[in-house]
Length: 391
Length: 112
Image (cartoon, rainbow over all chains, first blue to last red; front, side, top):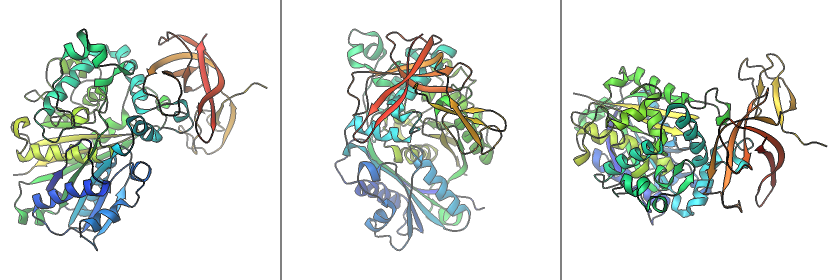
């Protein structure tokens, strides 16, 4: 297998975008081509979840490759729920590592604002088990709500801990010009003060509005290439050094201990083993915080902290920029936004900026190894990536 | 006739599954027998959902996961004013969702 490097990155704002789906994907793709200094690629992988249902458009790979005037390069769409982005990066990795292609473009794109927020949530809920979950009205926020309650009762996590995740990630997003929500929030405003219940109503008890990510449009792009190509282009060398994936039961109630996220644990362990690193080697992480509880639990499952102690590390400030292991420097899904199919590519984009030293005011000092967790379903299909700064 | 939801018992190792699957999760066997799921059990966790899918015409929906007595776990709707993890619940089969195409029946739990 050949080493695989990231030679170009591009992103759009994660927000409400008044452009067609393919144009949003093209903005990020063109930026990545300009960043890399490339005018051709061998193959395009598009990560997307909702095109067929939300935007009434299928075969996005074919549409985007032509819109970019890159025919006759091959192209296809990768759909793996909210983990589509990292799945597409994994596919691009395999293409370059295997020797099949020298340059692979991976573009994640989603345009959720085609429908209203409730319809968007209902669309995402189509990933739940149709007979054992979906017919009851189960949505991702409701699975997260039930999970949060179990975690609170077992490990002593409180609403205050959840709010700390939101406050931290909103703070990080203030320094990310592409973030969806650039708004400082305070404990007083969302939990303690007289207006807190109005500002921060329940969505799926015990989760409140500020515990949930926004519904975003947006795109992100990574161009992957061989070492030979990377050296010619002369960008700071960032290697995609680890790729791991694991699955778990479709229906959440079937898990032996539903407070474990075994697919997160398995995917991250595989990615780190492949990269030859351990959790304490990681300088910066993007963890899939579609709900605040998930950042806490994923920080345990990947091995940064012991099981049941992630909230204590959060209390001590270990996960903010400047802390022992900064998590979600981009603002995370919570504040940067969650255009589902694009999210995993957006996480990788942030890690590459960090490893190149191009993250501006949110830069982590001396960042050498970055880890992402892209969480598909309610933890039933998880892809984890490790990026390593070379040289 | 009493209505039931069927569980799927592996004909080799007797592991009980809900929902059904093509291969036993314990031994990989592909033959199952069906039997009605128990209806009573213990509430493991719950949530009150305020942002409902568009086809629900109620202000909130309470959902929970129940460990059925002598059976598997199941996700269902709760008709309980003040649910509490660990409480005993009793289930029945009723309409849980109506959309443009179909009326869905499923497990609804009340306090035991």
